[in-house]
Amino acid sequence: MDQLADIPWALVAPLLVLQLVLALVAIVDIVRIHDTRGPKWMWVLISLFGSTLGPIAYFIIGRKSQ
Image (cartoon, rainbow, N blue to C red):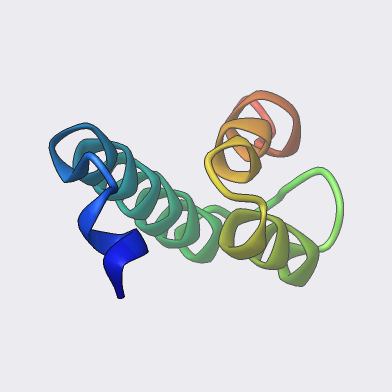
């Protein structure tokens, strides 16, 4: 438990919030958009388990321009 007290939460908390917001926005977009590059279930898994880079990869690579 002493290890948790040593973490600089003022620096870590904004990154965790950013990761959560990016994942939520990506998943909502995956559900609402008609076509993606690749199966939707794959992009949901990448967005959930890909940390911060998963949702960013979806918006750069996986989302088709309409």
